[in-house]
Amino acid sequence: MKKLKNSSNPASKLKTPKQHHNQDLGLWGENIARHFLARKGFRMIDARFRVHQQGEIDLIGYDQQDLVFVEVKTRHAKHQQTAYEALTPHKKKALLASIDGFLARHELSYDGLRVDWVIVTAHPADSSDGDYATLDHVVGVDLY
Image (cartoon, rainbow, N blue to C red; front, side, top):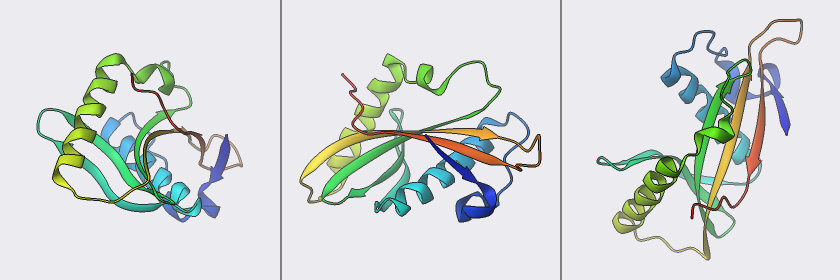
């Protein structure tokens, strides 16, 4: 698990959303994840790709020659449900349908396909540490 403080992470210049506005928190987490993956060498090609009624792919990019679809789950540290519990069978099915839709619309070359998961936990400033986020990057999530 990687801990990123806002002061050292250009993606997190935005303050951690203090309220439980899911969209604000989700966008903040996706921004953190995008920069985190870019520092690991990922080349992002799309974000928030939506297939009508199917679902959304948060981030899409290349890790070397592999095409990677990234699901980002962001939670406040005090949230009751863990991010791991959010990848339900319904969510997996919607993600697979979105991936199929993306591949049908884009002619891309790649050596392999993969689904990764980035779990962002927001820790709003409660101490002298300031705002920070912890990230867990799960490589190669099984959707079946």
